[in-house]
Image 1 (cartoon, one colour):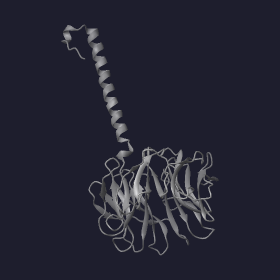
Image 2: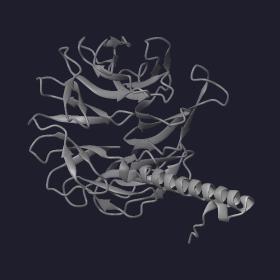
Image 3: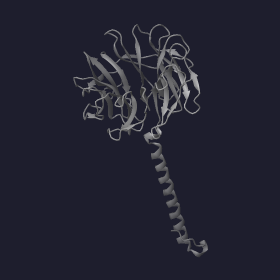
Image 4: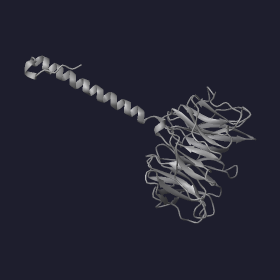
Length: 356
């Protein structure tokens, strides 16, 4: 409760004391309001999820509001659209479209819903991946009759080929500092494994030599998680820079899972301390998490149907994944410890590829 007095009725010392306290109190209220607003904006509910759905008869890209569960179509062309990738500033989204007759990369503005075609060369262009600053996209193109790694500006200009191999390249992604692209080869034993390439086309590094795929950079840039096939089984590994070293120097390869059933599809927590993945060790695909050294492996989903394709939210609070517990694939979100699982899509068609 405030008592208002005319300032000349208050001793000068008391007046200035009350004025100072009032200013401090107002500042505290503003700071508290700012923190509340900031924490609200940081909620994973404020990060929409891009995904692919066949609800209209063909694969289309949609944007999903986690809080309201409302889905907004970004493409509606009765042509296959897939592999959505939201830009770092979350203003635009790159995806692959078959609308032109072969596979091309398009861009859609998330506010205006306007679409811009980025690639025009004959041959398929696939796997768009954003640079950390959002100014460039890497992708795989078959325009020279051989799948190679290309880089272009975010508006589609200046597409540049940065690999020239006799084997098939498949895209991984950019290092967090933008210095490297990781990709992998499905060629001969001499060429298979993970490769690093500078996006300007210099400094090629053959990083691993196994049947490796699904490379994902840790957010701190110190590790790359991957799936390795040995025999008929797949396990999760990480390859890391040696302490105090660089990717040019010796690296360390660490096996994280050792179960007879396959483990695959790793994704990093935003703090680089944990990995979420899909495991078939329970007679059906389930979502698991573990620490980056492979310890504390925890089963997050528990049903008799396929749960797969986990993706960690940017704030680390939630994990989205695809579940077949209701029949066709649906997008489900849960807390990072597996609790509070919530169905976000509800239809009889296939929903897949959730991307925050």
